[in-house]
Length: 292
Image (cartoon, rainbow, N blue to C red; front, side, top):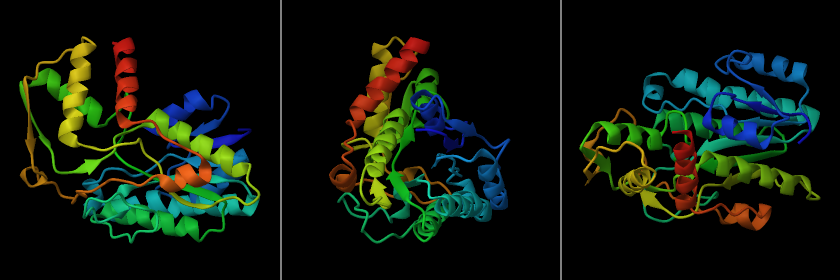
């Protein structure tokens, strides 16, 4: 991908891109602190990328309730500066957003055209980023995704594995629905989408939903994680995993009950089809087994 720049070098998605795009440039917070949007253009100008992939985000959902200004700087104001740079230099921009821009009601998978109504400050900051990028004039692919995880780092899979190794009983929410999305699958899907977009007569800028196929709940996801862990011979102490409603586990920020995303648009326009979420988890657990 030429002199592509990946922003957010320490995160799950960025680590996936280090394997997919070994020749790309990577910058982290030490080089570019997205809490300070005015830094963005200077750093990009010095690097002169041929494409920008922004994997960085403020993702501390509960902390954002009292830290919304910082969340907005990272999730909206800095991405706007990236998009403006890309527009000025006629290069493509990839950005990632979230199912949290919706209110989480109903059972139908969300389409890109559905009305947004974030439930929390994190969702508001991500929606503001979407709107800013759309108005920037940049050639952009903006991917909303859900429940992202990888074999390493801070995420639901590793939290469940840690707790399963410490406790005999776990209680996990069973009334929130979505698609767990394996970071390497998401990264590869976005690259395939960009390659397709660059081959088109007119760049198909816009919002696309991109996550692993299928759906589950956090409870069922946790059960599948521990089942894989036992098969892989990883240390598992847990004997019972109990389903609970979200109301039994109150948090500062409200979470959506329905995080299902309809990925038809990405498939029909960009030709990208994502693997089933079960395949993502199997690949993740195999990576963990190999590194154990």
